[in-house]
Length: 176
Ligand SMILES: [Zn+2]
Picture (cartoon, rainbow, N blue to C red):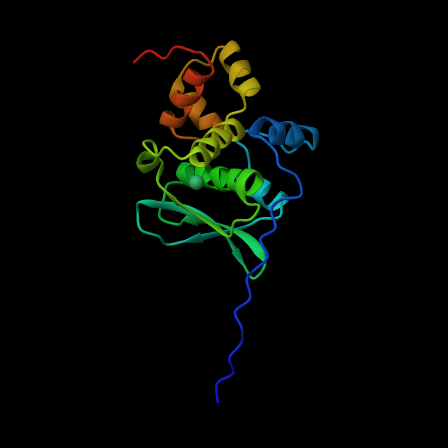
């Protein structure tokens, strides 16, 4: 005999506080957790998130979802380390900014998202860039004479393309 249980809706509790990228960076700096390249997986765990790597189709970058009452960040195990780092930062953003009342976020790769008009996706990408490449640190390195995009990208643990977008956003001109 089958036992039929009424399906219960899972509580969807977001973070205790919401934080922007720069606010999280300030908190990490105060806690002496902001060393470059940022241990972004450690930051996710610091915020109470579990991080798992799972095989996914190539156009999927990751997800944020509740499993057994716990928010879990999933990243595509097949992706390059820098992409995994950006994905974790992006999912941290969904957790801190958007998770209240939600149960899951599924994310396609950055390239597929650039034409996506979703405000939440733009916010999460901006947050990820701010977290992995804090404005103050980028400016300091450039002022100290580091002008190579690839060298900067290596120091922050991001792709050269992500670094390029970031320095342009901060008002620097990039020579092609
Ligand atoms: Zn997203």
